[in-house]
Image (cartoon, rainbow, N blue to C red; front, side, top):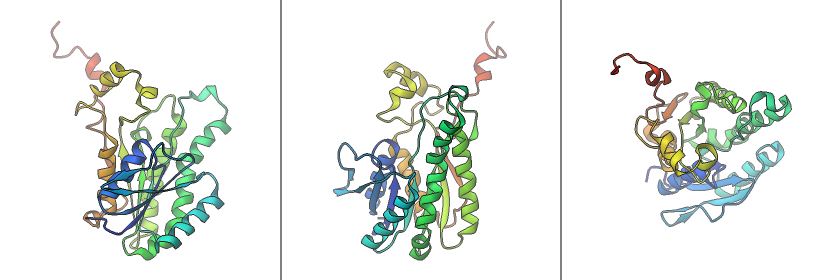
Length: 255
């Protein structure tokens, strides 16, 4: 298997996209360590193997450094870091103060930097060191109701590109950029089953991504198949979004 024996940390790897990534890494042969503030409802398993869970608040730098050092000591080093943890509630800019929005930036941008810096010495010495950032299409377009999140994800891609230059050639750094993903929390974003189906029809490929789609992309970026890929952003969004003006336009339509 392409990641046989490699040690991979997946932050926020207990549910949703993170669990999909963790399962993909397990299936690829990696030893997978997941961390999050809350434990998974059930252990993250795939291919007869189980991810190791540790509770961790990624906004606590001292705890992050202790976790990374302990994980590397237990497993003889680290090979891959997937910075997946993040998210945001729906909140219009004027409905909260700057301090509240800054907490979103902290989780989605500062925390990945903190984990990456803690992991860097081990990734550098691995011989296969790779960081995979989990971005979002929100980082490349307007994100009303999630402006701080979009700004953080834009910053994450920029951070990854700079990190890829500074840490080369020992550590490759890339970003997987998901579009809309079907998870256990889809209803919070898209509504009931009818809403999810309607949203899926706006995607050129006709469906939302599955967490496994994002996991497959992350495995590729961490693997030797991507040995010459660094500083890149891989869009996994089903073709993107149909431009709104095409629906509004009357050109070429029956009158």
